[in-house]
Image 1 (cartoon, rainbow, N blue to C red):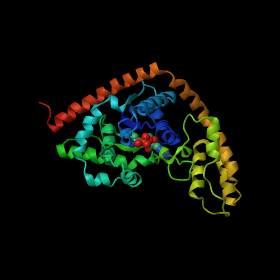
Image 2 (cartoon, rainbow, N blue to C red):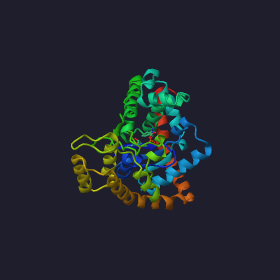
Image 3 (cartoon, rainbow, N blue to C red):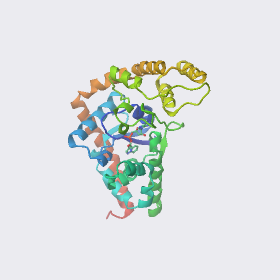
Image 4 (tube, rainbow, N blue to C red):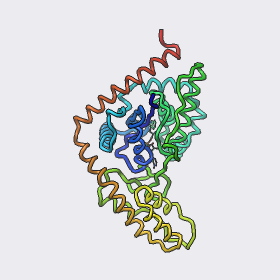
Length: 330
Ligand code: TYM
């Protein structure tokens, strides 16, 4: 039997390069090889209270991007999380066995508590429980995600194991973060910080449908440093630029800039120009496909309805069994 794979992306507008190389790229391969469920995590996005209009358009946008970039609703199950309310029921059950202390120790929660102290809602605290529910809903074992989700996956394993122990069953498998046997990916942003993230502002992210002129401007304005002594290590912003080159540039091009950096003679203007060119080559076909798919509302509605139906079949089976294990069935 094929392994079950589950993953999702929050609808916060558009997908960026981090979403693509951290997760989506693997979705494309996994839909060929596994029993895969890829959803749009719209329940999750409520922690930041989008307006109904923004939520709707973001969900539509991500659905269009999922399809435009190659997910095939016949090969995998593509669905919108809130179309499958069984997710919420499993979340409730798992919440009964999630402890305040462990939830408060999650890095992403601590970070939010520090940066937005006036919006620490319970949904934010129990975010890893909802993620576990998403995965365990289909009894997923592999979860293609970027590096930033690693700790959340650890929590999913904890909740799966705890449920099994509590009810003395071997029901939920242990899900693991997955990247075809290699390290999970972290794509840096353009503003010199850690990972590419929408919350770091517009200038940090490269979107998958970025207009050519905007793309060039963003990259030429990317943070670098004021040059280096021969042999000195790379600063974080410069390492970030090299990491981005690694995604889209040819190895010999990168090697030549590496050598210039080592010699202390690197010109960041030249590096950025090269990066902008190669990035445009990568983005251009994606941009065209996204534009073409966005307008096809009828097809997107059909895809969402079809995906919801398939996802609910799997979810309803799990919930039937979970209810029985808990003791709800008569
Ligand atoms: P989200 O929406 O922040 O990101 C979606 C996916 O993109 C990856 N990602 C990155 N990878 C590498 N470098 C980056 N700069 C970068 N930025 C984002 C994320 O690791 C993720 O894989 N909680 C999740 C969504 C979610 C989910 C789930 C994922 C909800 N339920 C169940 C898997 C299984 C999130 O907020 O991802």
